[in-house]
Length: 368
Image (cartoon, rainbow, N blue to C red):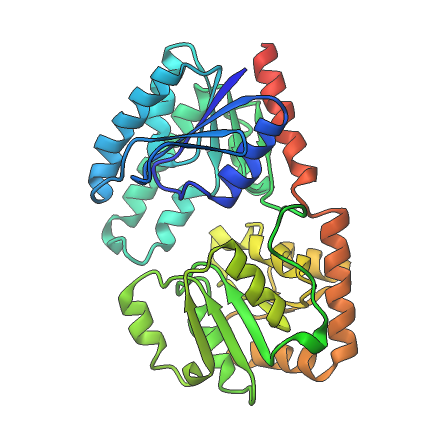
């Protein structure tokens, strides 16, 4: 049975698309194609056939030209199920559905809400753009076979529009991962944040928190959203205690988590994050790190019920620093929290519990 995943935006080895969904489908016996647009060529890896339509030149070119190249390649492949990962590919999905193909939309984010938080979008067009995207998204979702979402919150938005909507949380892989639990005494005097670096992800508050912490470094892994944001951030008191690492591949992420004592995920209180599943939080837990996280209801429920971290007001650098200080000064409690988080991921918050949802949806769609 042939299935085809499509992305014009994500990297070919995207953790959710390739490492989790595509490899799970290949392992289950599907012939899996993944159409990408990065210019790195075709290849086959772990049973996944990569079909590259070439890198795009700019956002507009990607939206128009690359989308049509992906549509053409998708028709060539002639799969039973098409699974698209980018909102800009919804028109491609709609055209495939009109040809009688079963199409699944994988909503990684609540896009209309996300648009309002994008720093690079002109404030004057954010609301009309958000509303327009929602209209298109809702219309197409009504006319395709199914929807997969990264959180229960996004699923609930689509469920009235498409009964085959299922949440597949982005929990970490346990097997074949570079993330390992290491002993406290082998770690450096450092804490870590790994992920996209933006104002709404709390970079300024994290850096300012460092000014209250003596003798510790913040391992900062990821790329700044804009050059301007980086210029503003390096001027914040506390930057001298930041170890800027840039983009990290999976192996390097594992190495940074192994040497750090605490993981930070202090996303700011915007709608897109309050209801989101924080992937990095679960990766910190898998590495046995106690977590300092935003005091959102979902985060609090996870950290407090599993006794694996401390929730803080993410807008308050002093409160972030106090939580970090408490964990650094109370090693026994920090170690216990790390152990609790590790066990919670092994037993509950892992990809094995989610891949079955993807397989079940595919079975259901193919049976109809």
